[in-house]
Length: 341
Ligand code: SAM
Ligand code: SF4
Image (cartoon, rainbow, N blue to C red; front, side):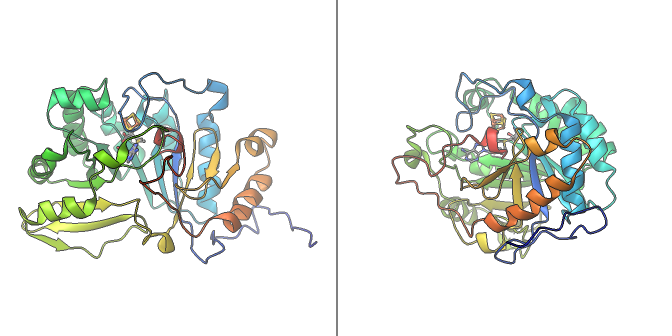
């Protein structure tokens, strides 16, 4: 067996390349499993959240991000749970925002705290904000999120616009019989607000006894509906992920379609996910993971074991994933709030 040469800050590789030659330059870090909403497709009504000591501290999150950025990661998305309900989350955004080699700091939020926090997030260096919005009808919004207030989220979107982010994008999960009749009104809202919108296909994560195939709305169907109403021009933009974009002619709005069920983006996959427990998931749809928390906690002043584990993890990043609506069980029984959406 060849002896591993320990890494020091002077011989870091400056890129993370996996076994299939893909460069990982994007991390999605969940900083909490908690949330002020309980969206039906994401959480159960009664949730047991992790004890605080099992969740990475914000200092540990900052240390982890720094290590990844030194390994060539240029884009960091902070997500959750709801990242903006974590106490002092802003401190983490400020720390990450200071990293010189980082090109893009972005956040995914349900928008409930944006009215208060949008300006500070922009000041901290956040470039783009994704806001989840599944309905423009307050009763329906309440039904989907179980606890959310639509007006508060809409005010949050206005605050984000005033803060002047490079881009604001809505994320919408369409469910048949729940909000699939709002496709056009949501796009009209995005056009009016001069922001983007992405439709995410519902993923079979979480509940074991799900009836998701009856509520599932494919992006192919959504695209067809929209093409009959708007003039859409295919965009060449790609983020290395499962999104494809169309420009709405004569508007500032792009429409994205995120199709986790399709396999055709895996060969360009550039990302890994880290849960709030410090589990590094190499693929959203697979179980392959590495526990980074013990490395952070057992070596508080030495990043080398952490760096080695991250580099080694590249050899287990799978080629692709396999979601199947027809299965009795989801491919992976894991809530999005756990993995970080
Ligand atoms: N709380 C924040 C929010 O809602 O934007 C960030 C975390 S949330 C888990 C990230 C994204 O995952 C949201 O846009 C949400 O709609 C999406 N999501 C959650 N569960 C999903 C599922 N089962 N299928 C598809 N998208 C899901
Ligand atoms: Fe919370 Fe986001 Fe999950 Fe909704 S989708 S319950 S807002 S974490």
